[in-house]
Amino acid sequence: MSTPFHIVIPARLASTRLPNKPLADIAGAPMIVQVARRAALAGAAQVVVATDATEVRQACEAHGIRALMTRADHASGSDRLAEACELLGLPDDALVVNVQGDEPLIAPAMIRACAELLAARSQCAMATVAHAIDDDAEFGNPNVVKLVTDAQGLALYFSRAPIPWWRDAPGGGARIKPEAVLRHVGLYAYRAGFLRRFPTLAVSPLEQIEALEQLRVLWHGERIAVHVSAERPGPGVDTPEDLERVRQLMAS
Image 1 (cartoon, rainbow, N blue to C red):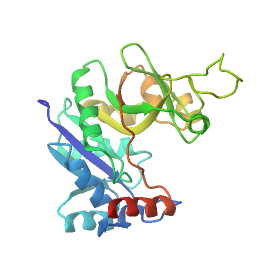
Image 2 (image 1 turned 90 degrees about the vertical axis):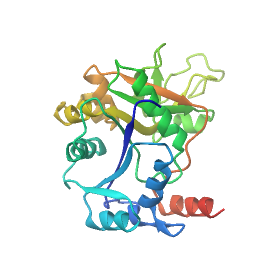
Image 3 (image 1 turned 180 degrees about the vertical axis):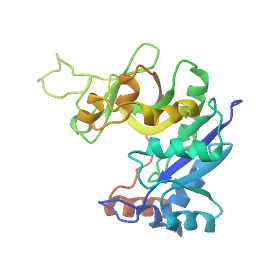
Image 4 (image 1 turned 30 degrees about the horizontal axis):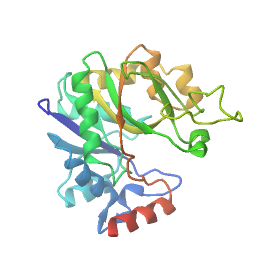
């Protein structure tokens, strides 16, 4: 990739389902360190953790990972990234990839593909990732975010509802039409200038209804390019059960 990109990993200790999640031990290192190590394989110019917790910063620095202290009152990871851009002094045209701090098995190629897509789409403020869904139960699950795109691969809408709805599905109900359904992956690339502007944008009604902040971007007329991956990302960590599963995978 000729255009350099930067990876910022937002991390906070507050988690209702798994307290102190970034510091959970996985294969001998805190999870946030494992995420940063994995992200570094994507070939970014730098990998930085943005946190509001001294314990996270200390854990990162103990393993040679750069960490920035950011405010504790950010409403979203995007807001934290915006502050990180300021602290890093990134120019408006810099590409910043947001890697979630609970994805220790994230595919480096997926991170790189997301950055490359944004670099190639000058009309877009952001890029993100999706993959095909082939399971009816997953399609109907409101915790699984679905999305639809236009002919150019730009996002039209994100929803927790089953979209697109197959009206003529055999037997009716929330059924998948082959090659028509995409699951959203919470991986984003931004232009730093847009990240700086994002916290100033009014929260949209759709964002409030769906609890999906990317809908604020579409609401305000910005475009999001979508990389459709042939592979699924590795499992993330939201619960103690997820943590144990990832530990076993990384130990095998």
